[in-house]
Length: 64
Image (tube, rainbow, N blue to C red):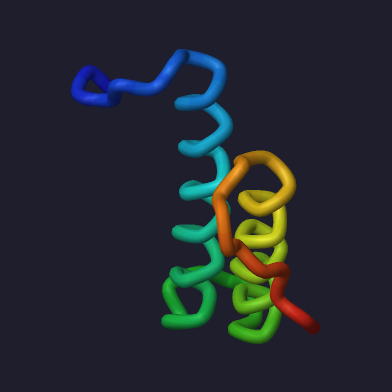
């Protein structure tokens, strides 16, 4: 995206995580053929991936 100020590699990683979250929330909202529960698991996995990828002080892994 043209308004991002992150280095390209970091920007790509973040946008990949955001895409997974969007897919998961679409499933939870019934906007895809994916089961809502599977959408929730996709969001949790994306948030855990965020925690592994980025140094975010105070970020805690979700327990599932």
